[in-house]
Amino acid sequence: MLSTTDAVFALTIRILNLDFLFICIFFQLLRHPKYMSSQRIAVFLNMNDEVYTQEIIKDMFKCGKSCFIPRYESTSRHMDMLKLNSLQDMETLPLTSWNIRQPAKNDSSREEALASGGLDLILMPGLGFDRAGNRLGRGKGFYDNYLERCKKHPKGKPYTIALAFKEQLCQEVPVDDHDVLIDEVLYEEK
Image 1 (cartoon, rainbow, N blue to C red):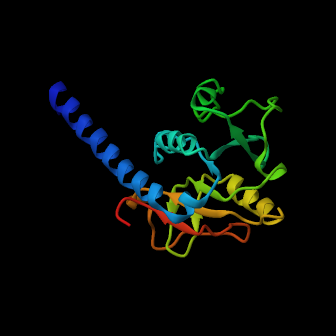
Image 2: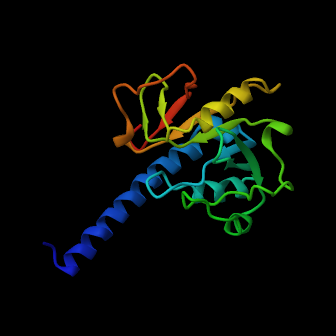
């Protein structure tokens, strides 16, 4: 059993390692041609086991990009991407049962990406990914359903980049007929 000092040291090393991994992914994204050329970007607000996205959101606002975040309907497979106005705006959003912030169900004041100009890029979460573009989500099909709706938009399906840690890369991810392929996986050693 570790002493308290050893446990704190081990936790500090783990946090620093996660920070380093995030920084590697973050800088790859900032230099990515699709990110650089995109003006309308949807990004997930991360859970504790996902790539941290707050710094990405900060960069989007700094660069004058429009930022859209998911609002999930827990009783269905429906998800909308709603405009986030600022970092301060994000801090005022209510927490879901998944402990992530999202616009309230009755918040009708926000621009919905598909009702306006569509999206150029979606930054995707997930549990696992393979090199063929398959993605394992959390089983509700929110992103697959949303991407199908995007295909019907005049702008078409936006480019999709999954943000992942290398441990999330798999030889093969099991898929169903309704699963939509992602375009690229960005991880710390790519």
